Image (cartoon, rainbow, N blue to C red):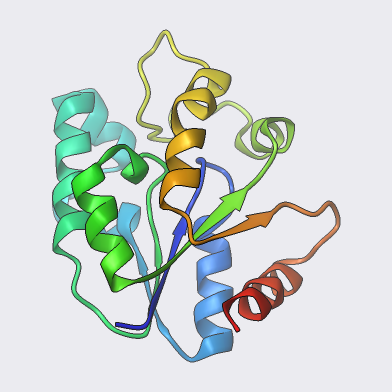
Length: 165
């Protein structure tokens, strides 16, 4: 299986970058958040509001654990990393790339993220989420791509392609 799996915090650009990367490589593209939204016929925030965080995380785990594909760039949801089952499955499918973006840049990109569908408790901050998830991103990543101020999506995709070779 020759897939590329993008992981990282909400707002790290996995979805946007995934589209560019897939185009450059001639791969298919799958955004797990979009897939979940379509399957549940709701926004991510709507799913969390209606059914709770645990329900959402269980759906995310099942989606991540059941993907079967080849030559696809997969942009995971930011919280997919919370499921060992899903991440172990995804690692078998291909190369896992951690898109590492500093907290200051994430906050700038996300703005008011209360309706963004981020899997977090109401009492948690973005810093709390990063502190919890960062060790897991490093645990599962085969490659880390660090945010470079001023880099375009095209340049970042090219950086990933260089790392893959």
